[in-house]
Length: 106
Image (cartoon, rainbow, N blue to C red; front, top):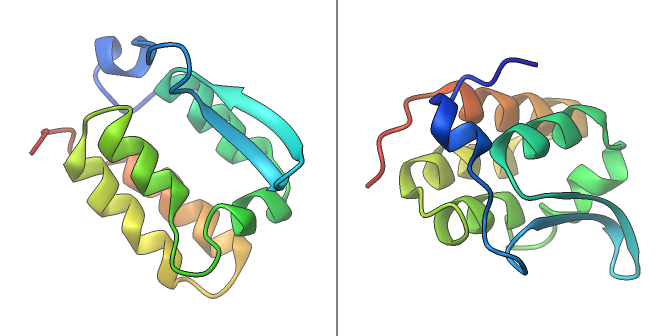
């Protein structure tokens, strides 16, 4: 997939230990992303349980990762919209749409 983010940001790897670890529960890793490109590919491919796990309770792990590991508060804010969706499919679409939005850091 061609990333909607600027080339350098989409391929820039976060430092070791700050990668996004996709899980379906606390003990089951289903993928790791160190770049926005890897993250996007995994969001597209992981099962619904992984999407739901990272949007559980009052937590939005996707937005937290964007804000702190990617240092992109604007992306984090756009990803925050995914939490309000009712279905995993809609949540996934909102995350992917957030990745396509403006990339200005705030």
